[in-house]
Amino acid sequence: GQQVMQIPQYQHVQEGEDFTTYCNSSTTLSNIQWYKQRPGGHPVFLIQLVKSGEVKKQKRLTFQFGEAKKNSSLHITATQTTDVGTYFCAGLMVGGNKLVFGAGTILRVKS
Amino acid sequence: GAVVSQHPSWVICKSGTSVKIECRSLDFQATTMFWYRQFPKQSLMLMATSNEGSKATYEQGVEKDKFLINHASLTLSTLTVTSAHPEDSSFYICSARDKGRNNSPLHFGNGTRLTVT
Image (cartoon, rainbow over all chains, first blue to last red; front, side, top):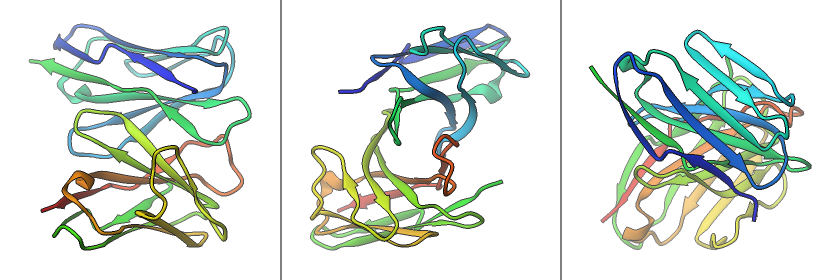
């Protein structure tokens, strides 16, 4: 079936270090969305990428969508303790109406 | 911004009883709502797609008679866990998309933590 693979599963970094999580889809995506879920909370929408090769930035966060629209990444520069949480990518398959979520990457930041 | 209200936020029930969870879109209309289940430190597993005015679409492996979904209006969907058992204990989250905007992001409720004793 349609799958979105996300790695790594966990990442512990020292505050100030960079962090990256990667997503790869088995099929071409219409768009990809990223969500952040704080411990004990619900997923909150971060950004949506639609165009092939698209790059978007939100302060220290950089989101990329691959040329083939099958992979994406989220990069955080100089992590802070407020970045702690689980980051999910979610892909909308071409012709589909439901998002397929990646497994998520749990980010822990040591101060 | 768009807000989705989910109630209750937590519930403890005895095995064999039924629990109803409500999901409301407060400032937009949602033709479609989605129900997810999330186990600790795991991803969101789509259970079913709730369609206003019609039957819900269930994902493979999800029992439709156990997880009853009703989408009576453009702002309300309910999930009823019938004859709950301890293995049904989980975090249930609903989400909604603004009507007519298939590519727009999902807005999630706060989730309901169900514990069946």
